[in-house]
Length: 352
Image 1: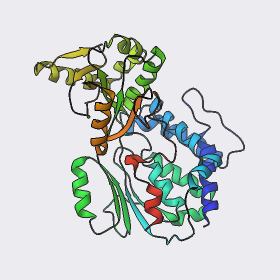
Image 2: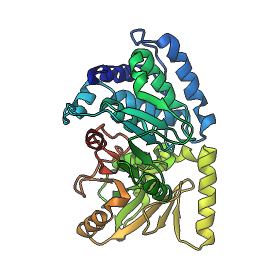
Image 3: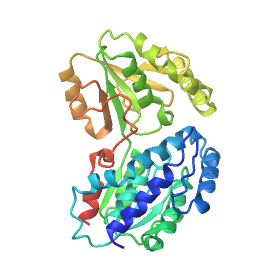
Image 4: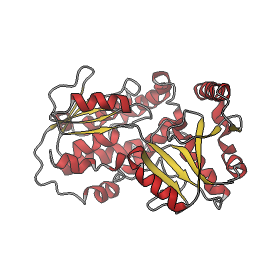
């Protein structure tokens, strides 16, 4: 298959996904194969929470809409135009996917197929249904693409390169097991926000989106705040009050109760608004329902610290305080060319 034919398949998939939103599912009669897939996809979305308790309809629809916006001809062309695909030697690329948020591995899947390779996918046990369903839709649109897509439940075998995502612990295993193969091994990363106290109410509300989307389970979720000494958290708490309903979700509430109890039994000082705790801590990785914070002396100091710790950080959010930082509310809306861990996946695949 030519790349242009594969690209058309994904554009059609984008049109299919654009029909589904939390507010309303509206069938577009011009979308291919709706008779086979539209109702079944709604059923799968509704069942997703039974497959993974964190995959509420709101979170699944958010991921679906994000990919619907990305899989357009304009977005794909802007992304792919930066590369030369003329010298690709087709290989089989194994993917070991995470399952912390819905469709978290779709970008790797998309990258492998569009670069001309065959993809061998091992899904996470926490997200086994969504990607295979979308693959079936792609095959319905263009049956030839089936030759490029394989899913496996067993041991990953017969691959030439691998992209594996996991924790810092599993990464050590991956690095040993795949030491003889070209690889991208992704480890734990966290995202941070740098505040200076001049942020507006609206900007802090948007920061709440960066914190609470997907219940804070993603590497692009803000888990740590850097604030100037003497920072008053009152405006922050007023702004994120809009997200208070998160506490009514049982899995989140259980984490809130547990983590708060652990902190209090350890005599840690906490700031608390009954659905989020703030704890002063030098670590980047905070538990669900908690945000760590750290005071800084100057922007220069924090810039140097973040630069030194860049291998631990996925995104930096600020009001233009830090070079290349992301605006508030945008961490969960990366472009196709915003690569995880700042590793250019397409360049890696083209050089196999």
